[in-house]
Image (cartoon, rainbow, N blue to C red; front, side, top):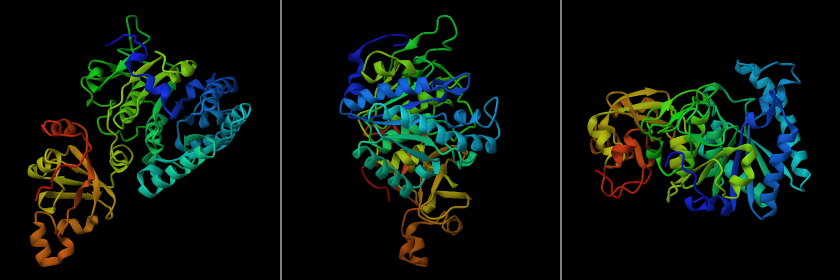
Length: 420
């Protein structure tokens, strides 16, 4: 598999056939000497306009707001502190979208700006609103240009990179394909600057990443999704330097949501969209998890942690049962009913995330008690789960434990029957 170059037979025809595609482009592909290059934007707009003229829909996720704000603010390089980054983004975002609007207008296409923060995809009501807005823009023939709202996002509620944002947007709009464009022509089995490094043309599963050295994601660390390749959960993947890790992580998020993905160089955008053997193709899984499940796994930020005993861990992870108060041994954090919380094993390893049915202050009095006991003494409203199985997703290495079930139907599927 490693280094093999294959054509459309590897499944890339799904990219060419997709009615709706999300394309992400990074700052490095839009700039020359650290400044926005209008020629590069014009070239990309021409490629995407061709796709639209062919009767397809395109959503563009673009970085570059901070880079666009450097020259007007007389900044020699990208600032490191958050406040100056946000100031640069405030100035640059308007300039960047103006360049995009002019570039697409030359092809008779109206562009529209969408700014998102991680919080917009952490809260279900905001998620649904973003979905409705994007759908309506596409129905009206508008090409949405999406970026993280760097002006208001904080370190605690930011994506940290637009690769993961693009993967989540692809799920929001129910895209048929995702194309991640950068200054590297795909995934290599080691640092592509080193002699002997070979490009990987196709990734069929996480197992294909065993032994691959990936780059360290740039910028402030974002909370990784489950199984993020920036850690150690994808075989023997190791962390090196560079930014490819975030792209592979995003590709895995998308493909596990049923969306085929290509990572390619920006000047190969036309070939990648046409299903030609450009970059690295990530094959999709056959299933699409429910929106809530993907939201919980990759967008939601836990407001607290519930520690479980071993029996509860087995029930939740292996048997896919709801979490009952009897299996909880500790609670940490301040959260309200309906907030996302992490579920950890006795050693502190997070094994799942779910939406909690009680406030943090209520749970200590419930811990270790059966629902029948609680209902008899506190009332029938206490005969309910702390986290219902339909509002729960298995994370990280625990997902592999869950796969040992012979009747398993996927990491995010609910169990076939409740466990009392």
